[in-house]
Length: 224
Image (cartoon, rainbow, N blue to C red; front, side):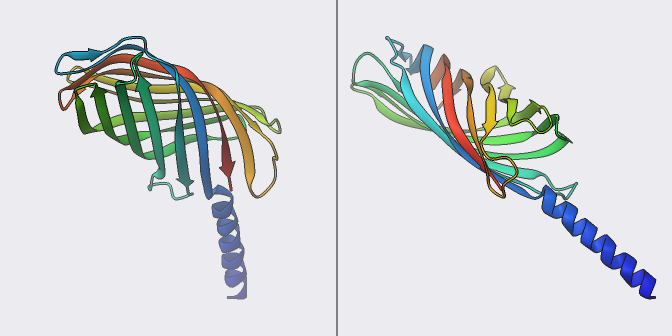
């Protein structure tokens, strides 16, 4: 009986140790210098004249756990301002992403996650005499991957969110590098930099988009 209790205690301790190692929270924010190529229109009134580059942002948090059948979760918020050559011409896009995903690979060299994202799109369209709001849900596929070397603080990463249903296309992709500043600490900090591109080809509430938004970004990420 004592041997059984000892074995059970060791097994429980080992399991709790593994779970503790696999539990994790990631949080971060990026600044994105983005430009626009294409058209955004409301009932055929196109906003397409000499877009200016703008600084936009994104904030996110991810929760990971060791339970196999329950997906991990992530929440992300992005803001995109599109400005024309005239001060009266503006489009603002706000997106909130709710993502559920599984880790298919997770080791010191390669990490691969895949799942689904529910993106809530909210926006405003201004063109002098026109000021309208629009919104709509966008179910999207989600893939995220990292490649690095053991005991080396630099990693390459890529992420894709995409949808293509009934002719509408919304693609959001990024590639970049992440450098960990203090590996081995309880709270790890990393600097991230890369390139992000969004392909918009959809119609929501009489607002039609056929445009590409892209540019470089830089940010930070914390992990504990």
